[in-house]
Image (cartoon, rainbow, N blue to C red; front, side):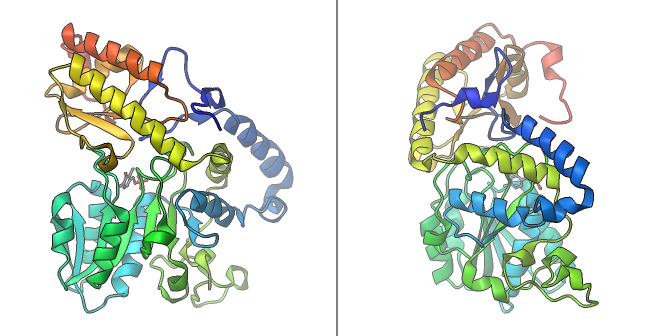
Length: 395
Ligand SMILES: *Cc1c(COP(=O)(O)O)cnc(C)c1O
């Protein structure tokens, strides 16, 4: 499949979209598919849609689609809920696998919600667990024999720093810990091979690089040999072995369905299922090569033309995901000024201007034009206006 494939997306005229790492754009085929689902399936089939249109099997079917992008065999990925909840679910199962150990190890580059969910679980358990947070560089050396679970987001949401999945998984497991990866900024951005890594758990969201739309369901991977033994937190009826037997006590399903909780968001799932069809015939190695070429061009151009900015991402492309960030004290206002000129990036406190490079719909000409605008914003201090300094609720 030749890249980019801009004609597959609805991209507003004049916009250069460098924020697909936060919310992917709308694939053109999603609107008609959703309209059809609403009119024909919900509208005509009513409750029979659960069987006639197999809404009930959709989370597992979509899980297999996602699984193909992360090296997970069919039947090892379940869809549903939000990523924060899937972190909780995976972490809870992981902690129970090492009852004699009390430390959940994470790093300071992790997304706050993952850390909050870990803290919340610890408080709920009241079993003396501790969340230990070290710098990303220290994780490998922090694998002491009290670590039960290593909870790491592979690509740092601020800097794009990329952890070595195979190496860290091997090290964690040789130290006796369970490995849980958060793939929020990895899936659809970098090649991932969960099966080869041997990690126990992985979770991720689908509204970023997978273009599933705002609020798209999250996913959870459980290594196949473990599925049968783990105890799901949030024991909902759709994770039951026989939901329609309506038994009074919970019995987990014998397959990955045990990670389901309640009724799936069928419309969101349908949008995602359609969006995922874009990946048919795409090789993640091609995506990765194109993403690195675009990011390298961006860094070279920005460093040559925007001396006020300082690179916040690793310089080595092998140690970076699909985003590039720069420090700039007036970063928030500069991003707003840039957006007013049609180049959409985003800002992460305290001073990070963040740009995502998604080869499905970004090409080299976009990168060069984006830097033209960025240089204009900086050289002419276009950011220095009150309107650009007022923070919105979402940055
Ligand atoms: C985007 C992101 C989230 C968001 O979680 P939601 O529950 O989907 O809002 C959580 N963790 C990481 C690492 C993320 O990048």
